[in-house]
Image 1 (cartoon, helix red, strand yellow):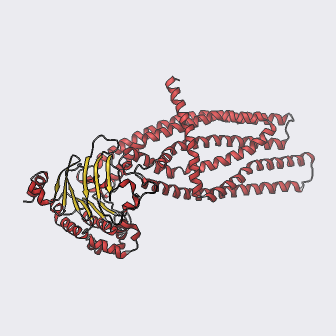
Image 2 (cartoon, rainbow, N blue to C red):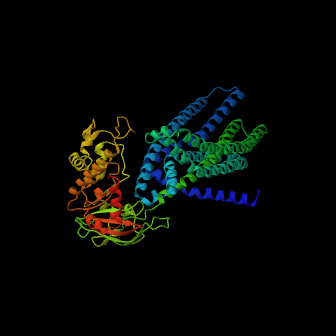
Length: 608
């Protein structure tokens, strides 16, 4: 073995040992998911652990009693039948204990799955938007989601380990009474098998870790290959074979790697299991020899061989279970690391409530911003104000920072440099949740919830879920009431095709429902970030005309590439390279003859 191989092997074992620290926090999660279920499961495991050693003693006593009767031609005493009744009771009890343990394991599995899934969802919702824009985070999140539910095997394995250890302690005590060397022999012959299992468990973890990106690609290809959204292009561009071939290539590579490791494990573990069997039969021969030479009675022989066999099986199972738990503990690294992730954008202790009403508005002071992990500045020393009752339009080419300004106002991100003030106070001083209640935002990539029409509107202000009057009013303002009127079940119509009875909408219809969310919010600040991109020019004009009416006296900020709607704004800000290059109303900017006038004329010429 080379020095490099030895070093890698040592590092692998160190990693496995370190991974065991994952078990206590997971046990804490298990306990919180159902403390009384955990407690009762442990009680019945203790009772079940007593059954094998008790059965072994009773069986030995029965054989000894029968041998005595035959040897002395004695009368069958009631004592024999008491022993038989005891053995029958233990057999029945062992079976019942096993079924009760299975029941509590099943209940605990359901409770744990529910509890940890809720924890993952809740924690994910608290993380920064920055995390969701990082591919590495998606790998971790995917592993965390899988680990949240797929670690049930480890939870159940820990329960089995507890029972196996308890059973082994009872059996070991019995074997020690006859010979401590037998116990040492059994343990010594099983250690190599444990080390082998552990080694391959680590290799399996490392393999699965490496395969995570590839498996994500497979999931994506599966989704694209069978999605309604992609169906048209798959047929028109003959992409089916291309996607299938790529899926086949990636899955074959994964399959080959899995098979190679499985073959190595089969050979190594099979050879090591032979050594374990040698330990058992050596102890068995010792017991037979001492019985023949008069060192053990026949009932002691039966009891001891039973104890040796059960102890060997249990010790083997303990090592195997420990190896499995160590393997599973490695997989839990990402779940626990996910729970340890903390948002950078969060409310301070004793944060201020949002001002009601807002008096002075927003002010950007020398604000610069670049996305984490990148060198390019999206905004550079930006200064502007959004006054109360003012409607501002942001325009510029893609990538000039328009949406970034929206993300900063809503504190999805904090500035890299500079300050954003609201009524003269840094946004970071306000409570985020309270601040969000005063801001209504609809992005271009808004969510299409596969829920009812009522719920699709109500997500804008979820406490109004059962206030149908408020939902209808918001839908009327966004022109979504006409969309709902066409639905067979009205506001209770399921939307989307994911669930039975669902009805899909056009892009424009979805957008009107999304706009209703902003109106339902009844916030002091309304922001539309190109949410009408799927509407034709006339429909967009109607939406923004209504938007202008409904935002009278409120702060409003909107982004659009259509200048017919942009000109409605009281002030237009032109962004280029993350800075303001022009500012004013439509007439002023056209008279200036600069960048705005150039873009306006360029778009207008396409309609002539």
